[in-house]
Length: 168
Image 1 (cartoon, one colour):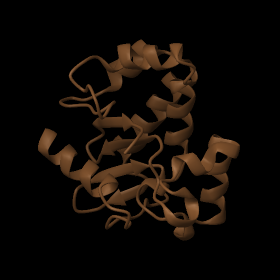
Image 2 (cartoon, one colour; image 1 turned 90 degrees about the horizontal axis):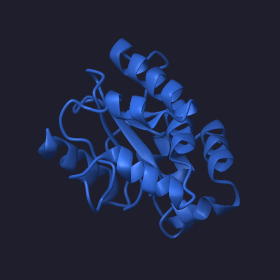
Image 3 (cartoon, helix red, strand yellow; image 1 turned 30 degrees about the vertical axis):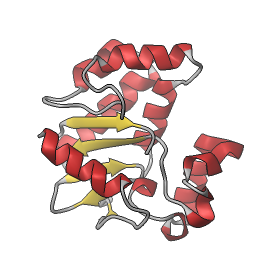
Image 4 (cartoon, helix red, strand yellow; image 1 turned 120 degrees about the vertical axis):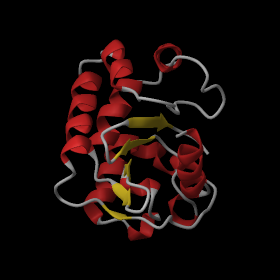
C-alpha cells in the first residue's frame, strides 16, 4: 500500500506535466462517494477525532516530512499555526476530482491532476474561491507556468482515504 501511494504521489507531484488522469465521472463509485461525504461532514463539524477514524486502513499521507505520527496531532499543530485544516478538507473534497483509472485512485481536487489551462471555468472558480488572492502561491511558478502544489486528498476506489496533504 505504501509503495502504491508513493507511486501515486510521485506521479502527481514529481512532474510539471499532468498525470495520466481524467475527470471523475458525474456519479462516483458508492464507496468513494460515501467516504467523501462522511469526510466533508466531519470536516464541516471540525471534528478531528471523527476525521482520524475515517483514515485508512493502512498508510495515510498527511505530511511530506513526518508521516510516522498521528494526522490529528499534525492537524492540531497546523490549526495552532493559523491553518484551518478542516476548512481545507471540506473544500477540497467538495471539488471535482480526477481519477487515475488504472490505479483506482480518486484525487481531489482536479487541479492536482491537470494544468490550470485545462481546468473548466467552474473548476478554476472553485480554486479561486478557496485560495483567494493567494492562489498563485499554490501553483509552482504561478498558474501560467506551474503545477498545483496545494492541498489534495486521495480516496481509493474501495473507499479507503489514503492521503490529505499539501506541498511538493
